[in-house]
Amino acid sequence: MKKRWISLLLSAAVAMTMAAGCGTKENEGNTEDNNTVQDGNGADNEETVKDNNETAQAEGAVYYLNFKPEQAEQWKDLAREYSDETGVPVTIETAASGTYESSLKSEMAKKQAPTLFQVNGPAGLASWKDYCYDLKNSAVYKNLKSDDFALINDAGEVQGVAYVIETYGLIYNKAILSEYCKMEGAKIKDVSEINSFAKLKEVADDMQAKKEQLGIQGVFASAGMDSSSDWRFKTHLANLPIYFEYQKDKIDTTDAIKGTYLDAYKNMWDLYITDSTVEPAMLSGMTGENAAAEFGMGEAVFYQNGTWAYKDIAGNEVADEDMGMLPIYIGVGDEANQGLCTGSENYWCVNKNASQEDIDATLNFLEWVITSDRGRESFQDEMGFITPFSTFTDEYQPENPLVAAANEYIDAGKTSIPWVFSTIPSETWKDNVGSALLEYAQGTGEWDAVKSAFVDGWAAEYKAVNQ
Image (cartoon, rainbow, N blue to C red; front, top):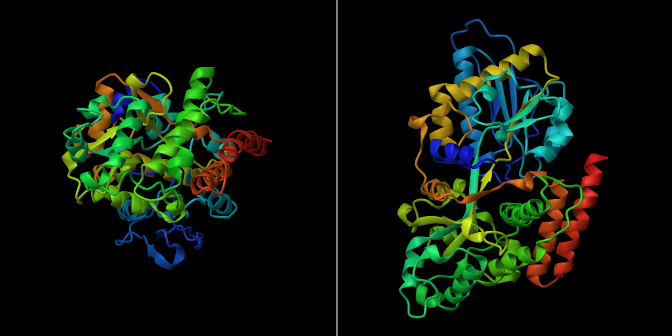
């Protein structure tokens, strides 16, 4: 990913939301009526979208299968307003957590299939490339700041366009770290000295030993391994050893990962579960909400998550001015110049098998979303997205101290780590790695099982998906 474009994007807007592998309750509702906007609970929560003045209805309809549960209500509101304005019926449905792929398969088999869906990157596109309309002449592509955020095939067809750019790292509490730095025997005098895994571990181990003096439960917020939290480790943390292996081998994807840096992955995981707010045996029952609360209430110093997490931790004990972010150091590469992890796994695709009227209606809806005042305000203030579109000019910049922290690394010339986890072959691979990580943490499994899930599992899943 080109640094100059990352800098432009992170400077153009300052808020975002998760994604990182999140979904919501699966909708099993009836999608036959394209005049319906549905929230994450399916057909029981339907609202009819009609032009109240009975004006002439435009041709075509839109059906969006949404991936992000956090924005289900905001998408429903946008759909209603667009329909009121244009007469075009818009249906919004949201898939259950971890079930987007299966939900998409089910919905695509229906007569009224989604006209708009999404993939998580090149790996996700592999299953749906034959359904993707060429967006080359669309407004969403023409307003894209860089082809770095488009999925373009060998024939030059634009099969997907990223609509949100996100950044993650180690969110930290500046106030607690400042207090630690003043303690006798502190391993650092300023947080800027934490610029490697070795230094991070030295500081974390010392702070864990002094947790009672610091008034904390542990250095790292709990590494919960339920579905609301495990993606932080089986996907986002796994991004680091995958990226550094790709960098070493000068590749951008592979059918057989080697696991070159799995020892570094282990070292970071060991740090998370040792210098923690909870015992490793408790991780299976800990959730993403637990981790956010621990950090937000000042019970933990570090919390691996992204800029989208701001809304979950804001307004608690940690003041906005005390929120910072560090890179996730694992002891590999040029750590002194390492930045945060920045990228996207949210790409819009338009169903080319829909009628031309529905395709046109969908493209017009997307154009309205990224160019109208209402659409941009929703993305900025309600959904909290950083986008790669040139239409999001200076006046569409919400405030988020975590994005400000991300900008500091860009401005300092640090090298951002791209989201190569979009090349992970399948959700099954992630689940198997996550299960092995949990077994290891609990003491009921060995690290060799993690290695096997990571390396052998990659080859097996790649073959299964691409055969």
